[in-house]
Length: 320
Ligand SMILES: [Zn+2]
View 1 (cartoon, rainbow, N blue to C red):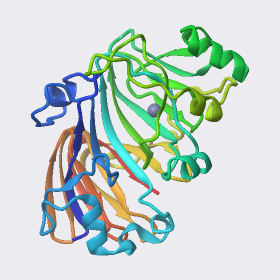
View 2 (cartoon, rainbow, N blue to C red):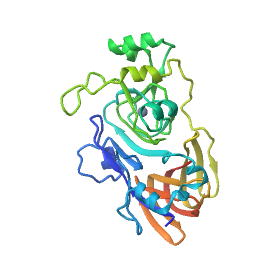
View 3 (cartoon, rainbow, N blue to C red):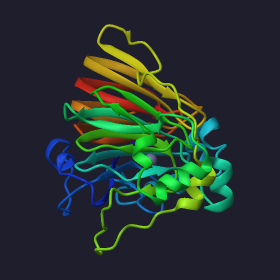
View 4 (cartoon, rainbow, N blue to C red):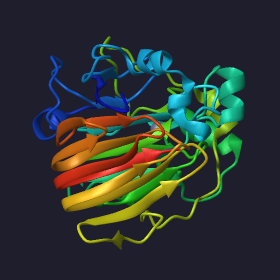
């Protein structure tokens, strides 16, 4: 059973919108969908297999049933499943936050740290986000500015465009602004240290918790340079144009635009996933045929070999 379709876990965080339901075909009972966790073994929201004989199993149960070899020679070297892939729709800004690196998170949170990548699918014309600091600051100044609500003054606010790539290394203070729909590829972690929440209250009417001491421990307080462009140039064959978005120790992601048919090779090194972000696609491998519509996700075990994709569509392919 080398390729299966996945259904996500949904999150209705207070800042979410309705784009994932209205434009990405997400069907659920929640009024707002802030996030859909498309490829997830995280206990806070595992995705579910919805095709083939393992239908109804979580992705975690599916991988357990097949054995760790299905993650590939590189994929199985990780102690935990390495990746978490989400759609995010921000009607309001997310909190200003930072994530720990592996060393800190494994010690303090007993899970992986979180380096993440955002690929912007859609945004309002004036959308922005926060990416690191705009000047070097000390830990003392960082604490003071969190405590007196002036942290935004020292953060770098960046305009956002469709197709931009934001690589958020662990330790980078950040926040997704309002009016942005994106696909996030990240380490398998839910460790977030919130430092500022725009004076909002949570669903219970109380301010959401801040994690100031931990944030001060892990934050990079020097500016980071980036052009927010994909890591690679577009490469075209007859029907498909593929571009490397970002690569790091935990994930490598490509975007492909297709008119017609093409073959993807899923080798023995890593499992892979394909998240369809535009159009419809037929995905075929070893006698299995899956019909995908915009917003749907396929998980492919390592060594699946040639996967034929047909359609007028665009997707994000990720592997270790
Ligand atoms: Zn984050």
